[in-house]
Image 1 (cartoon, rainbow, N blue to C red):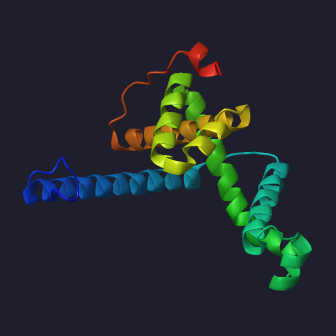
Image 2 (image 1 turned 45 degrees about the vertical axis):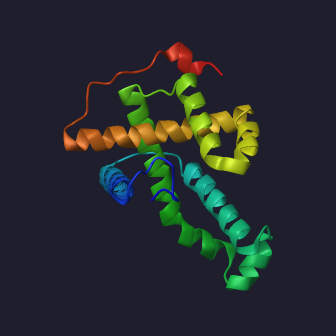
Image 3 (image 1 turned 90 degrees about the horizontal axis):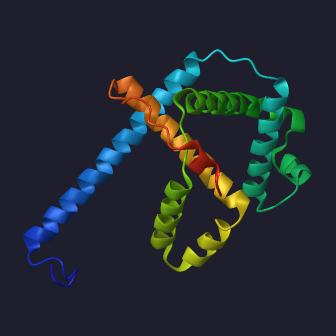
Length: 190
């Protein structure tokens, strides 16, 4: 046990830490699964109206990602030739996923708005520092990424989405506390 870490005086202490870590991992996985199921249920029950251009735009994003991942930065026409389909066929296949993404995004956005969810600069900075600490050698790259407004805005959106989904799960469980929005002026800084 001592060869694993100085904080372990005995094999029993090491076993207890492993048990605690595995329990935490299992609880986090169960929470994520529950949150996903809640969001899926809300999205399926949502009746939203939005312009078709949003779906087309999302199809563009998905198609771009597919081509990038499949070809390692290849071109769309090369990808279409390889899969033996037309662009219209691929777009039709991607439409259900795009519809779900747009609906999910709109539902989450409405939860953020209705619940007054914000992410303060302090919370973002703490998240960035945690990510940098966990990144090891890539920490400097992450720090540079989040020093740019686009990187910070991307992180803010991710954190808002996470908070909204957690809020939905708490509401579904009946354990949601009254909304406690952070100070709007702090959330807009940075």
